Amino acid sequence: MSQNWNLKLSQNKEHELQNHSFQKLIGLLVVFTAISFPGITLAQNGKFTVSTGNTDAKLGALSRRPSVGKVETETADDFDLNQTTVISGATITGLISPATPLANIVNVEVEIYHVFPLDSANPNPLAGNVPTRFNSPSDVEIGSATRDWSKGNLRFVVRLLNANSSVGKSVLNGINKKPNNTTHGEGPQTGEEVEIAITFTTPIVLPAGHYFFRPEVQVTGGGDFLFMSAPKPIQAPGTAIAGDLQAWIRNSNLSPDWLRIGADIINDTVPPPAFNMTFSLAGNTLLGAGKPGQASCHGETISNLAAQFGSTDAAAATLGFSSVQALQDSFLAFCE
Figure 1 (cartoon, rainbow, N blue to C red):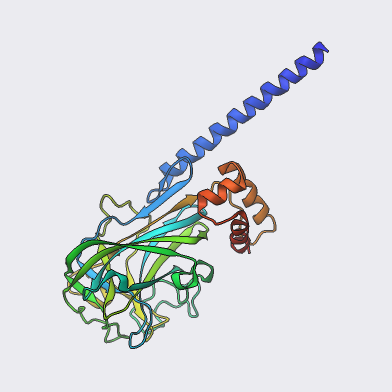
Figure 2: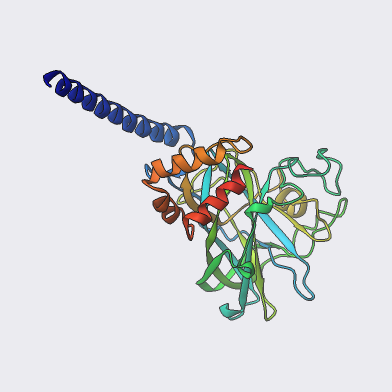
């Protein structure tokens, strides 16, 4: 009996030592991630934010949903993820011009793009109807990452920041194929500065990589949403984005190509300007996601989620999923 007791005591101590070592390892991994990958604010619980900071009001670039008499126009800016991430929310800052009641902001859609030449028909960056596609968004969006209020997979709240605001430059309709791409923009615009806070009721799951964030806003009553620029390089309270690129724009007449807002359209300085747009993303990084395309991906991911957050129920609640089943479905799609 004494031998059995000593064996049990030895096993308990070994288990405690292993558990303590595992906790230390997780802590070291979190510290290593925070040191090694700038541009993402990461806490020990896996929460992260990406932010370009406050607007500098230098530019407003049209980004609107298609509607009667209005051509779809898309403005996109880039961000970087160093590990698999669940994005549960975003903010965008823009100018509603001309000013209109905020109730006229009736829809928001978000798309995520890879960097060209991924998801693109022609990998030659000089083959399109624009000066270059190098480091542009891809031709088409990542279908599984699209979220749209009208489809019920995002919510949004509009907050008025300044009822009498303006931007120094704008790009609205002068989005032309080369060689007529340089229009220098359409000058100053005035209106209401707003922040739109977006909650993805179906969170977006993305593996590590460099991406473009493209929001569109539908405004009725004659107004439009002009996505407002942010300082480049990014300044506090923003956080530096690894490999920060620049903002691009297109409309349905230019698609699938994109133009650099600064170098291709504004182009009024030497060297040409480059713009960031004012947005933020928030969510959670995953410490042990499986690799998409592998048979073990889904089981490995769900198991590690339960370990990271305490249970699958806690993981679903923390990450913003409506249920464990919704979490399971999202990661099934992620692992395909």
